[in-house]
Length: 146
Image (cartoon, rainbow, N blue to C red):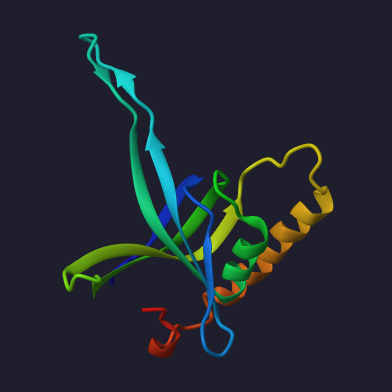
């Protein structure tokens, strides 16, 4: 038995990139930053904050939610799987990247006071409904954006 499970809480690093593949399948990608807070050792040495960047990929309904509600700086809970892949860049150099294919997403950012509470509640309800169907769907090689 093996397990491939990732849980992250972090901040969206830039506006999500949303694409629609042939057949109308939505794919959202964006970087997510997670930060371990710095601390001071007993001898007085300062250990600085450490920020790691993660490449997040969301499909179908979750991607459509990202398109409507997620923006740079938002705090998210992401649950998914690690997926490594290789590709060639424009110079022909082989590159290796690890992506997180999200199966669940929860929006943790509080909304500014002028934000419509009903819209935020609708987004959370929609995310819960989509979460249930994402794990039932499989990704065929024709769905891949690369």
